[in-house]
Each structure stands twice: as C-alpha cells, then as structure tokens.
Image 1 (cartoon, rainbow, N blue to C red):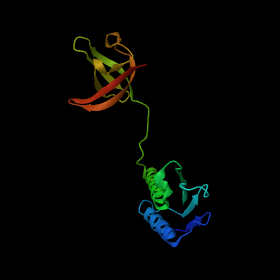
Image 2: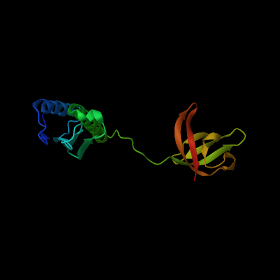
Image 3: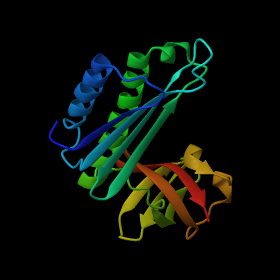
Image 4: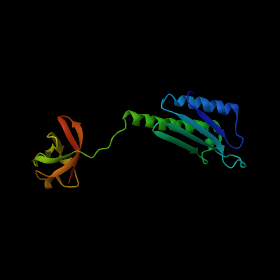
Length: 180
C-alpha cells in the first residue's frame, strides 16, 4: 500500500495473520480511489470477558476533501464473532463510501432540481389530453390520467403547472402534472 496505514489492536488482539489481512484489504481500497491520503484501522472486541462477543472494526480514511469514517460493530450479528468476517464487512462499507466519494468528485451524482414548470396551452376535453408550454417554449403532451390533485375537467388554458417529463411515442410527454 502506498498510503500511510496505521493499524491498532486493542485488548491484545494483535496477530500477524490478522495484520496481513488488514494490509491486503486496505491496499484494495486504492483501486477505488487514488485520492486516499491516510488510512487508520482499529480492531477491538467489546466485553472481552464474555464468550461470543463481536469484533468492533473502525476505519478512518482521509482524502483531500473528505473524511470517511466507518464504525462497524454488530454485537447481534453472530458472524462478526470472527474478526476476518468483521473486517470483510467493514472494508466493504469503506469501499462503498469511497465509490460514493469518487462519484461526487467526478460529478456523477444525480442532482435533484425542481420539477419543470409551464402552463397549460391546449386542452382537448373530448380526447382527454392537452399540451403544456414550458418556460423555454417547448410543447409537452399530457394525458388526462397524468393530472394529479385536480380533475382534468377542471383545467383551463393558462393554468400554471409543474410536471415530470418522459419520452413518449410521439415525443416528450408529462407523466405527472401538478396544478399550482
């Protein structure tokens, strides 16, 4: 592993095999992010005097614009009585958080903007459909079943609406139309 790795064992749990496993798992994290500056792993076992206690794994990862912290203690999860299983699950959680971090850096995180806005420009009450004119001048088809919160028959030309747009058979259409 190229990045600094600190491994701490509490309550005399240290073993060369366990430390080697931690080093291999930490090295794999570099596949998911090349921005890792530092990694710290703490292995502990709560209430060591009783038999069958789960291992508590804490992983702290430092990156240029983030601090990723994994606290993985599952006292009720019987498989976490095995330190290797507890390590596997903690590093899997760290991997998922690193992947989220990388997606944010690349800008691949879905942005939630408000619903598109427009006005009812045409209505065909006999046919049960209409068209919405958007702020940018596009025309969006909608069906009577798309109207939410108000009866289709109560709509009038000029009603202000928000809508969810999708691609229909004949072009853009609104899957839901909310009257403002």
